[in-house]
Amino acid sequence: MSPVTHLLASWIIAAKTTDNPRDCRLVTLAGVLPDVDGLGLLVDGAKSLTGPGDDYYYYSIYHHWLLHGLFGSLLTAGLLTCFARRRWRVLLLALMVFHLHLLCDLVGARGPTPYDLWPIYYLGPFSRHWTFVWHGQWPLNGWINRVITVVLFFIALWMASRREDSVVGVFNRRVDRVFLGVLHKWRLALTSPSRTEPNPVHNPGTPRGSQTEGLAPESKPVQTRELSDMEKADQKLAPLVVKPKNDVPPNNLLP
Ligand SMILES: [Zn+2]
Image (cartoon, rainbow, N blue to C red; front, top):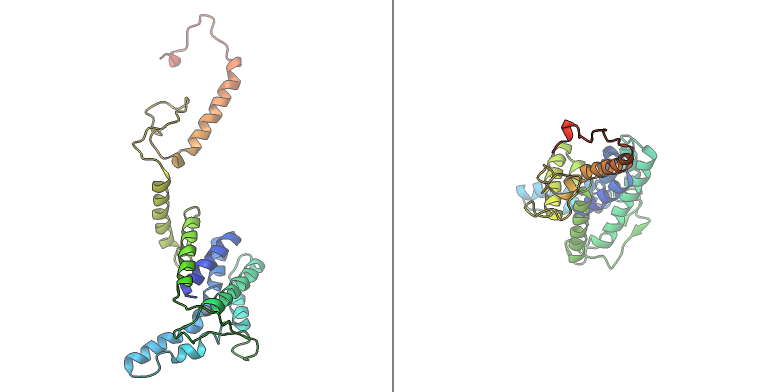
């Protein structure tokens, strides 16, 4: 599958299974780094600019051969674990998402021609034993991969709208904060009633025309809770309030 699909799937798993941004980033990278052995494509591209030749020479030789196997998984997970906070957890998760990458490539990486099935050389680059090929493999740019990518994209977006980080944070935290700011605004706009709509539920503890009126429900849950607690406290304290003998309310309670 494409690196974008691997990235989204790995981030979703990492976001659900790690408890800090650093480990989340490391586990996500474990699901993407196997495709580093496909960087021969850049060399092929540079060569095609300078003269005639096989467009996919280095790509076809080294991609799925160097890092798409057991060696690649141990190397990648081992290196990433060195930078982790919870090392055992990151090691296991990195191995898991790495092998998910291999599984995804096994089922959906065919191409560029219809007869190009991409095997997984599990003992590569040292041996061709334990080579796996699935003949039902669908094209890399086929509709199944597109549907999976779109679904993963929206899941990642939905998760990010409820978190303090997103898949963008794997690459740059500052850009991620900007992205999340926009995302949260969109979520509020989509889930909140119009600002001009009157609030159908009037909290008796909240004066009409106060600053909270007309704001989105998400923006005032804390105040609603506080007022609710205050009301409860008022109810409890009501029997204990002793009226002044002359029944004249204090100045600060006059209407
Ligand atoms: Zn791959």
